[in-house]
Amino acid sequence: MTPWQQRVFVIGEAGVNHNGDLALALGLVDVAADAGCDAVKFQTFRAEALVTRDAAMADYQRENTGVSESQFDMLKRLELDEAAHRALAARAGERGIAMFSTAFDLQSVDLLAEMGIPLWKIPSGEITNYPYLVKIAQLGQPIVLSTGMATLADVAEALDVLLAHGAARERVCVLHCNTDYPTRFEDVNLRAMATMGRALGVAFGYSDHTPGVEIPTAAVALGARVIEKHFTLDRALPGPDQAASLEPGELGAMVRAIRRVEAALGDGIKRPSASEAKNRAVARKSIVAARAIAAGEPFTEANVTVKRPGTGISPMRWNEVLGVRAPRAFAPDEPIELPR
Image (cartoon, rainbow, N blue to C red):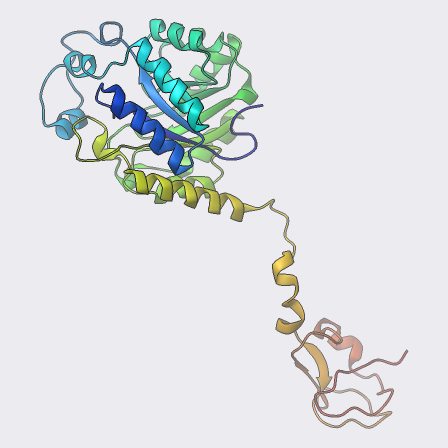
């Protein structure tokens, strides 16, 4: 069974919003638990294994941090060591929430595998990393595959690698994503999420970087089984992802909205709900006498009409009633009866 099989799986993406501070990271676990998330997710990497020392920052990283430096220098400050990871897992266990992390290098995959995390998140940047995909697939656990910056062909190729090396199609969920922080609403293209899921025959979801909670909630209405959203203790904190993150109260509001939409989706069978059945007779109409009708008088469009309540003969039987002789006298507004 996958975590998203029984209900929408909501991931609070703490990412690197701890700024390398374990105390902040532990606080993020608490926020995710308080908000009602199913899981809290971090990012696991060693700067030396992830990026060259002279790799430039992304534009959004420079804009969001107000600093111009190498990716290496930025990422080095955001690392969490093994002891920190184990402390976070312990806190998550205490709070009754799943904790896992995105590994950005093979060494980090080994660390997380040793810790026994419950599922794997492949980030958008690794979707073309063949040896990484093979290693994740061979672990035999549920996989969430993020697809920012990718074409459908890119995603299909990555999925083929996963399936060829031990991943099960029914245990993979692809996440539609736009890799810009924050994402403009006009760049979301949310319909592509379901298109991708249908084309690949896998569960689908959405990793959101837009402001607010509307778009992930809409994704659930369109069938998303997994929602991932960045959150922070305070958007004013320094860091590359803080500006595209929800604050604690907003994260809770998003989870509540998702659960309401999920409940509202129902099972897809069109039928009266239990709550509205009692109103059917009140709202619908019956065929009644439009004026006094004598016994034996034929029912015509002149002497019968349609009024509430719907406790008598349905107006859908109108043609069946016209021309029949009244079995008895009827007073105005009295429900019409047919001869037995």
